[in-house]
Image 1 (cartoon, rainbow, N blue to C red):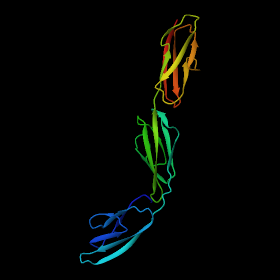
Image 2: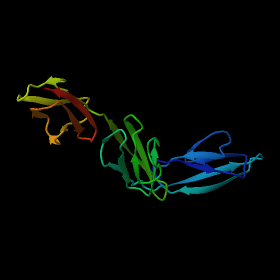
Image 3: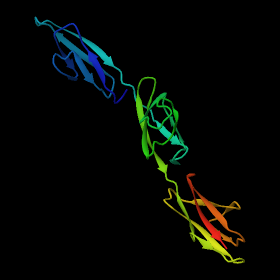
Image 4: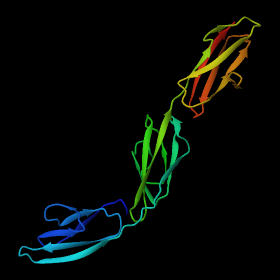
Length: 219
């Protein structure tokens, strides 16, 4: 395949010379070449007495038309979840590194992130051994840190108080909140409890990472 190298082996003489020139050492019985186009090589062998003989070999260069690509169902995911990676454009594949992957030799794999953001490389091959590579970066999304303001509250009977949720350590844009009791979807709620109540708010980021905060109220 174009861009690859090949080894040529000669035997039957004591030393050899190649044309066109190739990379070799010593008596040059083994030569390495990487022609850009189909090329015919002539090797001339010489024995101890100076007798010579030659032969030819043609290396056919195939155009490398592979174009390997990777698609992912997401570019980031939370610890404990997974992301699907799918390669296309070739007949067979090899993935690296193998850390976190369920397979390193199929077109479609799923990745359980090993703890840090990771760059994966897939090499695709056709039936002739021609290859192409593609890369994808999979990021580990962090869990948000959810807090409730005010942190503690005493509410007079019959009075109202606004509780507001905020999040830090947020990976990506956007977060949604759900309050309990009540399953209220909002970043803030207005309460007027008649008994002591613990309010819990769960924040879920756009990548599905979640965490919770709480506040105890008394009256």
